[in-house]
Image 1 (cartoon, rainbow, N blue to C red):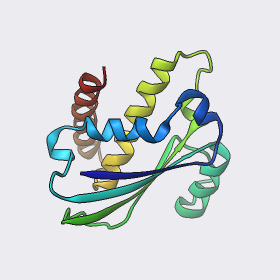
Image 2: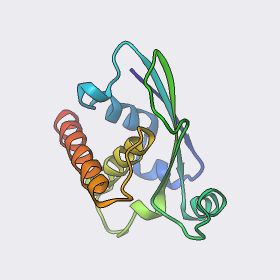
Image 3: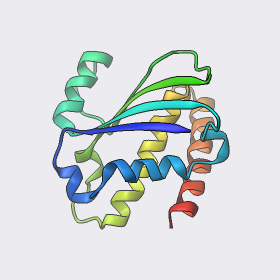
Image 4: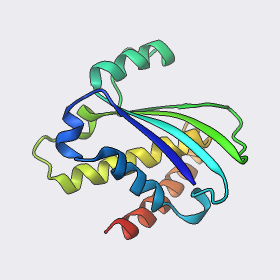
Length: 153
């Protein structure tokens, strides 16, 4: 089971997601079986942020002086899911997902689900530095996304 702690530092999130904690918990509950970690206590933190704050974090931790859509900070380099595992932290920028501003709520939610899955996979050790790793991660993202989409509709 995945225990998710959701924090928000930008009020704009609540305009699009009335109950963000439930929204993200529903995503986790809709994950395919292999990512639900049954009979285990797996936890992670999610910070709903904005471009200004994510840029600061990106500069401090990755030495990149620009905003980005998502940051993931795995708690451990080597992921071994045991009875009680803290995966790490995910930070998502509202400003990145809210483009174009004219997009409907459904599109915003789809982008949010996709980027959350992307960050989740980073916490599990996936990356996209090499081409083969990029395609492996993309395959998993699509697999999880299709599963979540079918359960949340």
